[in-house]
Length: 156
Image (cartoon, rainbow, N blue to C red):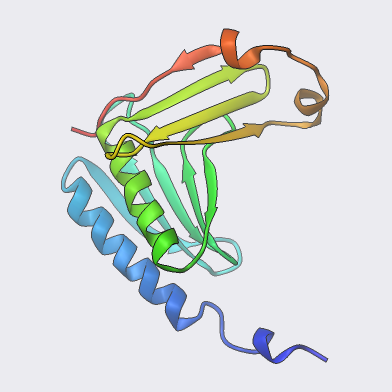
């Protein structure tokens, strides 16, 4: 038997309301410096794609899943899973502000990436990712020190 919590429609009204508000915020924040496209993922869930017009600026995607998935364009890192509450929405807004302002730093080594966003209040939020099994199994001591450091340009 399917639990009652899993029988409701997807996406739920809360999800759609959060995403409509996030889309409106993104459009207001980026203005004409980026395109904001709304679509669906392979499963029909809403996706917001924010693509800057300026070379060197980073794109951002928000995907509705069991949580809000915030993905900043990177070489593997830069993916946060956020709750559908006010804290998750605030993080999404602050992450988007940081990317639009160019406050993004990425450390890259073979198959690894560590992306750091600096919010307006000076706090930093870091996420690390790997690409492929070989990269995860290959030791690279100190890669966060010697890996290539890449920045990002602001949207405008």
